[in-house]
Length: 317
Image 1: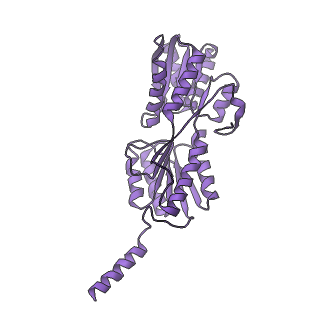
Image 2: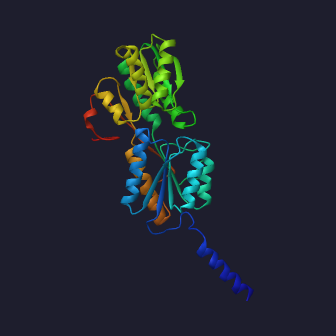
Image 3: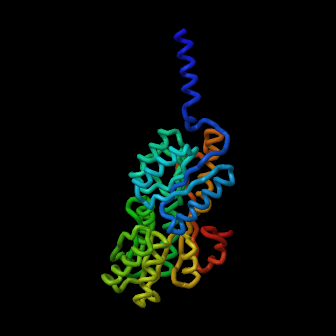
């Protein structure tokens, strides 16, 4: 009798327990999507594209924004758990600080798929889909040298230190620019991916180093801020600026000759791909990818090919 009772209890627990990550299920349910800040067109596109793909595949979707704050992100993960999300698409707020939030989702048997940025602990998320930032930075730096020349002083605008992409891009720039000993970086400043901070940082750097011939930036928003500062001081004609993201506003600046280039991140590709892998995982227990971390190559946009920019963050072949 005791064995029979224990068997019935175990069966009841199994039926009431949440679906274990990796166990196949039918499509459908809520996919929670957490981006950084939709005020930035890059993150806005990231959320919109992921939500559209989720709906296309038969899910409902909810997009929220952490604005780079790990406490907000943690609360949004709690909400995703409470709402019985079947999967979470997350652009992590902090490489180290977001690990705990991902662990909470995993403990609740909700698979997590990271986009755009990584966390510092592999094996938690089912996939980490990111731009090949080192490759993109090298592309940008090579073009920047063509535009600026191989001699002179320059400054750099840096992204948020909590985001590994900031250091990866900066190191990618250095891997190319260090080959030109007469190109000297005389100053750098963190502007946290933000246009207003980019404006202020560029103003400060230009006041301290009035002879610079170029500004290389970790993203488009900071680059556009630098362009605004250079316009205000009447120095834009003598200073070349390079960006990174491929945002619509940056593309317009390339067309206008104010921005030398932008490095297009394939956010339209990997945002949709993350949802597709979530769908496949929910149905089969496998993402279909050969590894957790997946890199997507960037593309350079200059005046020569800017006409092929057909829609936000898409460059036709």
